[in-house]
Image 1: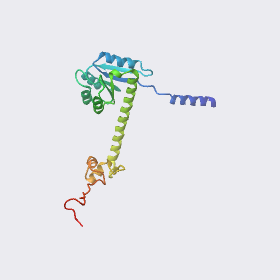
Image 2: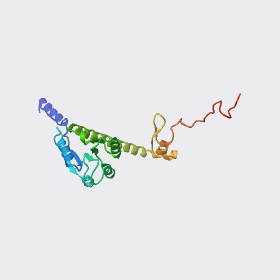
Image 3: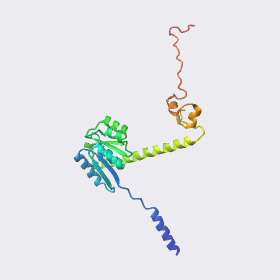
Length: 221
């Protein structure tokens, strides 16, 4: 093999390594009892440039629960009001390990807050929906869910490492509040992390009140 041939082979191997990975199809479960709304979502998703979408639609929460038993999608588009349950009830029962976007016919901040607290990553009003907004919200919800899942994994790894240490370990923040406490430290201190977090930070002890000089009973010179 000549030097030129060897270089060409190396370049070819390098090209194989740097080839971009194919984007996997986006799996979406649509849970909405309105055929018109469902068709609107499907239309926006089918014509998404550069993205392949595999969508499944169901009108009932119970059917969606059954679908989750067969495998979790990447995203759930969830109607707030279903014939057999509300979207909040569905989330509380399903606890899906995927991104969730709640959809409703009215813009209600209280509903939005409830949806986020129940586990949804975002909230959309159907009357304001368009293709770009739906696609951007889907990508944002996926990113938010992935970051939250990675944070939980990191916290679990950290907890496992700390609990494997036989010496007591305590981590404090800049105010002196306990942030981390392993099992060995709990035994040594005779307390728990939750108990320490509920305790007031150092330096916040109750101060003894002083009477003003003109208060009844005050000493006079």
